Length: 543
Image (cartoon, helix red, strand yellow):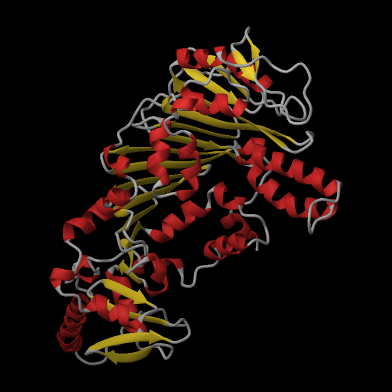
């Protein structure tokens, strides 16, 4: 075998190298212009040459703003709050559908909904005609344009506009710059695309909506056309929704319509925050601080709520014969005359429900600011109680130790209406024993930490349990129509399970010279204190 290294060369090496270089340079001369045209075309097709507010009618009754809806969807439906919907209910089906599989790949949705997500509608009655607007990335814009060539997408020409229509989804859409507009209503979409600048939402208002959405999960702006009320209640109302792992917080700010306040609630135009009395304990409790006393408040409210007319008339100024009456012989007269002297601060509480009385007896109490000397003067006019009573006994008895007047009425201790006094107010209760207990333990003279006009707290689980206990007594006696004991348990169980995890629902509201502010908060018990319930996203993953 020969070990000599051989070198084979075909042709001239320099010439071959020069030929390859010449061909490469020729190919580059051809490809570079192609790439340049492609880049210019890509930049041209995905340019952002429209402002989003140009497509939002200034007279929209409903506007909804949301940022990064794909990410927000994950955060929102990871909350335990959405697991409260009972299985089999319509609400449970809607939540599962929204939390279920996305109609498009997540990466594509993130490119289609890369900026503010906006919904506009003429009114709340026409949400089906709403126009949805999203801001897209360049990739999302190019994808949406390429999608128009898909066989499922049809082209429709309307009013000189070229729209895309997806028959399977009954959706119309159009792309303007990097803005995607979608609607189930062709007319509403055309209206949005052909808005005159003077009829479009101002850019500053759009920016304010986007800014508000950065501080909430969902921001909604409602105009006077949102609801078909005449006159409209609000000139404008804004609502922000925040969903936490164990809470839901809804904040509302609104400007009352001058026409509404003039015709129905003139006192709201001058309402301002007041010191609120500390709420009483109970599964339904409220505190009110108005800018007028109770008789005047009922008189004003009865003008728009005729159901209150009887109560307003009962507390009207007493007739001369009432003022000169020497003795008070029944509890109704005592309460009626006492309430005529009440001030602007009051509390109400429903603390329990006794199912074992001759009739289900709610344990209710209320307090009112009052000049206590006026009530003491009424106590002094109480007639001596009859030695023997039969039937319903409403004659007041005096418990001088507790400065309390009560009537045996009918039944047991849970049905003994009572009136008593504390430092600067009057306590009224459906039970004398409850009144004595609250005199000893309730924060009757304390004030809520924040000034306002209304505080309302509901504890759904104890309330629902008390109501179901009463229903059980009726079912056991055969007095509950359409239900036996087993069927009642089956119907009540899902709802009792659902509300068991809720700690409370709290509403705090106040007015400020025609402006109304309200905070609504739902709080759940600690997860360790309640049975484990899968969130909608966890349930969707399991399926």
